Length: 127
Image (cartoon, rainbow, N blue to C red):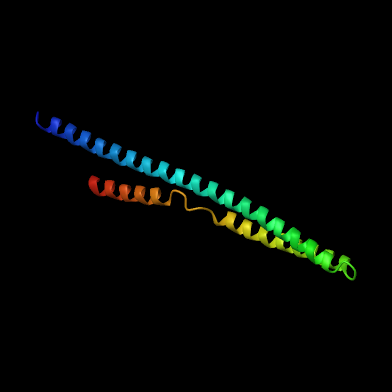
């Protein structure tokens, strides 16, 4: 009987150490994924804002060009068509943005998959 307890305690310590090691590895993976997602979102925001500024300047200059081109004959029609075009374009972009927001992110997908593997492994170890 004396031998059973130290062996059991040793096994429990070893299991606890394994669980702690798995937990710390998964936590490191989770932190890494969070940092990668933060960097990705920051880059996306920068690129989107820069593209928006360039696109806005391009559209403004193109609109001014077309209005000046038709200044003597149809300037009001051109301004009305340009305004309508921009409103329609804004509506389409808003719908695309909302669809992307509803789609969600796959943040923590790898961590959750690894945690599921760990849970399956621990279930197998208990049996």
